[in-house]
Length: 117
Image (cartoon, rainbow, N blue to C red; front, side, top):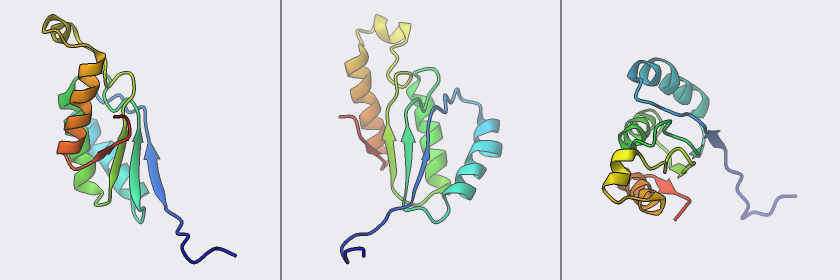
């Protein structure tokens, strides 16, 4: 018998998207799949490698798209590709810890939750 305080959550989980800015893929394939498969879920969880390039603008594009089609909480766990430091970023003195901080700030600023602080 389940205790009265226990509530099961239905999660929509996906990862290793490696999004590289292909808006046709995002809008015509991926977001319709999210809308279809995440309907009725309590939260969406993206488990790593949102971006395939380390470019935060790609993370931003994808998360904004997911927010358009899924109204619940979105939890994001960064992967190694998300905090990959690009050459131009290295030239400006960035390292992976700074990049992780930038990733986390972006995710929070978009109203999502990050699980790697």
